[in-house]
Each structure stands twice: as structure tokens, then as C-alpha cells.
Image (cartoon, rainbow, N blue to C red; front, side, top):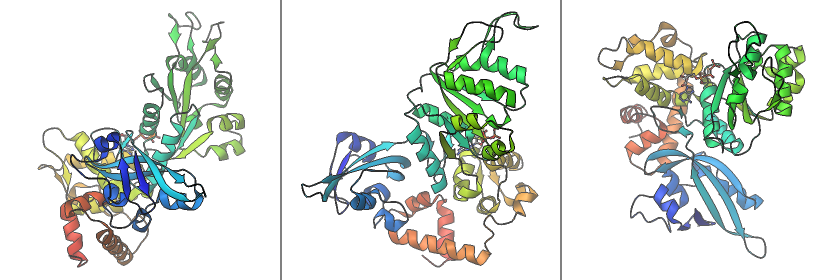
Length: 413
Ligand SMILES: Nc1ncnc2c1ncn2[C@@H]1O[C@H](COP(=O)(O)OP(=O)(O)OP(=O)(O)O)[C@@H](O)[C@H]1O
């Protein structure tokens, strides 16, 4: 926790803060929060981020945002909760901020788990953080390959049920009877071939989270049974008479437009309202193209055996421009294939599939507009960022070499 005055100066910090966010012997008190947390020379809202203090100064109410902070370990997602302190007349005289590292995702390349730092990714992560402590059912909506299972796992791990199981049910391609026995289990002799009693997935999720992936694929008849399970929290094994109590937190995911399916009569409205208590939009890779280098580096680390793998600048640029209809899964597949051609561990343009190299630019921008946008972004970053060039490259998600090349290209050196 830190205490701040209304001019962004840190007045005090506790030992937990110092341990987590300061380097040894670093003097925190008296410094500006935006310098310490972001290495900016100006407040966050002038550097293109939402500043919770600015809002709280107007509303005099608590604020909560998810920011990427500069820490001794590099950039990290941090959940910032801010409370204004008022004097007797009701004016804001100071703020208390509680900062919590978000463990569920990384803003730096990682060997496992969710990575991302684009605003649309952070919005999804922030929503997840808010839903995690409660038992509210969450519906993850996103195109195929956007990481629904990874988000479900991150939600489970951030929840109080993290010590319990996370049970994943893929609802695609299951016939009605198979779905029922998978979900509810069956008694011995319930049907031909049921030689033993089998515990169903709803029962296996006891004390944990039940993740129903592609819930839009559940057959209509089964939707009734699913609704009953969710509403009453009870079920019966196939062939059984005993009513059993289920205790799980429900997370569902779909890439289908459920609302339209409700209108068309192929998805039950009552079930839709039940599962849609807390919808979270998972961004497509097109909506977070700036995360492509970070994701690519993470995925390459996950694939590398002895030789480390990397992309050269041109290949990285080609990936950034490709719209990736198959999202992160497609990016992973493209890299898996390309690495087989990269004998020295460096993936070049010639190693990428033709559709990626010849693809249309992501946001139908002309090359000129793209360049002037990029130049403006770099000029702004140079003006507000106070760290070294290596740190700036890190902050922008670029390699140091790429940063220097761009600075030269735009004559910003
Ligand atoms: N933000 C991310 N960070 C790291 N890896 C990711 C991220 N998003 C997705 N992936 C990877 O992309 C692949 C596809 O993810 P996942 O299977 O979770 O997608 P999905 O949305 O469930 O897809 P589908 O709807 O087709 O089942 C996985 O290998 C996953 O590890």
C-alpha cells in the first residue's frame, strides 16, 4: 500500500509494497507515482492510460484499474485500488492505493500461461479479476483460438476454489446420451457396457470449477438437464435414484452468437440467462495485434528444444500485419511450421506460409498512415518515458534492435 498526496507524490509506503515493487535501497517517498510505476515523466492520463486519481478527484469515490507497472522484475499486471481521503469539508486531501500483482497473466514472454498487454486483453483480465472472488457464473465469449481454456484456468486460479479441481468439459460432438453420462456419471448396469459405477464430471468438479467449453453445442434436450443442474445444484447419475448435490463454480465458453441462437430457438433462453450472469469478451488477435511479438516470443520459447528460436525483424513485421482469423492457435501453428525451416533458429520471411506474407494489412491502413501513426506513437513514448532505451523497447514490446531501427527510420534519434 502507498499513500499519495493530490500532486502524485508518494508520501509513504509499507514494507509489503517495498518488498514487492521497489528495488533494495530505492527511495520511494517523495517521488511521483507515475515515475515509480511507469517511468513516465507525466501523469498516466497524459501518457495514454487511465489515471484512477484523476477520476477519484472528481467523483471522490474509490476507483479500481488494471495497469501494467514497471517493477524490479520487469513489466507486470497490477490491480490498483485507490481510495480518496477526505477532509471535514469533503475535499480530497490524499489517496491510499492498494496494489496487487495479478498472477494470472504475464506482460513479458513466458513459458506457460496467458500472456498479453494490449488494452483489450487487459480489459478481459480485469473483468476476470473482478469476477474471480465470487461464485457468479462467467461466460467467456470469443472466437476460436482466443485462449478460452487459458482464461478459464486463470479465473479458477484467481478464485477461492483454486485448491479444488478445474474440470474441463468439451461440449462439441457429444451425443445426448454420452453427454448425460459424461456429465452426471452412471450407476453400474445403467446401460449395456456400464460395468461399474462411474463418477460424472459435475461430481468430479466438487469444490472446484466446472468449465463447459463450447456450450453452444449442447443439444437442446440436454440443455434442460443442464439448466436443472445449475438451478437446483442437484443431479442424478444415469440409472441412479439418489439425488446428489453438486458444488461447483460454473464457467462456460462459446464462439457462437448465443443470443441469436436464442432468437432462432436453438438455445434455451432460460439457460442463456443463467450462464450469462457475467459475460467476458475475449479479444481476437486482430483486436490486440500489438501483442503478436510478445505472444510469438512466448510461444517460441514453449516450442524450443535445444536451439533457442527467434523471429527476424521482417518476419515479425509480417506476422503483425496478418489478421489471424484462427487467432493465437493459428499463430502457434504458423510458428510450429516455420521453425522446421529455420535451421539456425532464426525464422525469416521465407519460412512463413504464403498467406501470412501476402496477407492484407490488419487495419486496412495505407503504409503511409501506418508509418505516421507509428511515428507519432514513438515520438510520444520518447517524450513521456524516462527509462533507458532497453527499458523503452521492453515497454513498447519491441526488441532493442527494432527500436533503434525505427528511431533511425523516423529520424527520432
Ligand atoms: N493470451 C494467450 N497467451 C498465451 N497463449 C495463448 C493465449 N491465448 C491463447 N493461447 C494459446 O493458443 C492456443 C489456443 O487456445 P485455447 O485452446 O484456449 O483457445 P480456445 O479459444 O479455447 O479455442 P477453441 O474455441 O477452438 O477451443 C493454446 O495453445 C493456448 O495456449
